[in-house]
Length: 345
Ligand SMILES: [Zn+2]
Ligand SMILES: [Zn+2]
Image (tube, rainbow, N blue to C red; front, side, top):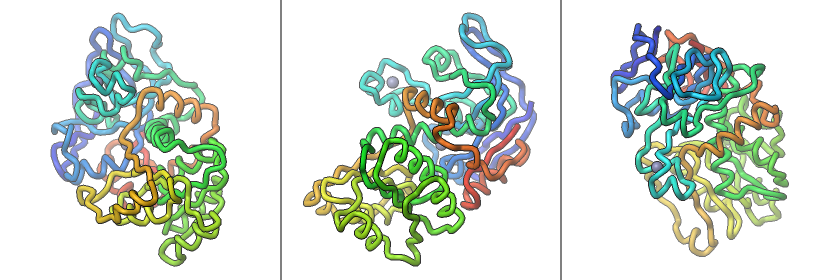
């Protein structure tokens, strides 16, 4: 088979590798699609190194068909469709026991420590299968849509932590794939209003089509004025930062109402250093949360939302590349053109 092997910063090589053999408890998946994430960009550029041990195969957003099932595996038939929640929790550590398996002390994940989806086949390890990280899915949903379950699951996690709910006014900063997922989830949760802030006209168009009440270009309009207008001068109940610009943190603090919730969803550039008016947190009683990855329970919810069509992902993948052009796919995703890039082995 061929796979995109990451050999170190800026070195990705598509080459012939052995098809993994399935041992007891393992499942071999023929990848139908692997969508590219901002984290892949940061890994390829050498900006993120934790958990990466080159040479390895990246890709943590994938779905496909079962190609082989190891001994002692129940519940999976060859050629049935599956999608995988990439984090493999140990289920024993302090965090796993407290519903924070995404920051498991023995953290490992497919596409990081374990070879991922930028490959024709992925071996899903026995501990992942046993933990229920591999999900059987509906047969009639295309793999590129099923692959989006992973980023959507992280958004489900973020919304749960920020308690997005009935009649809230939500400000989504950044309308890339993540911002557009948050927009849709917020509407499903029954919020009163979603304001989206996004410089790209194309992406604002997507946001409007998906139901954003207001889509603002922060480079030509005064976002704080719009938020004030839309909230009777109070500020947003929840601000979701979906773009990795550290300077936005302070802006988010100012745009939230007193007692508002801010979720730092995006991983930030420059190691995340930002100067913030911390007194805003103090005097305005702000609640600031972060989120990284998702739990199996978030993944399960996200999968149901995609399978049922309640979250519309049909137009999310705008660029498709064959596996041999995986590095180009990652660079395209970095360019911010379109919405989501998929690699189709
Ligand atoms: Zn990701
Ligand atoms: Zn653990």
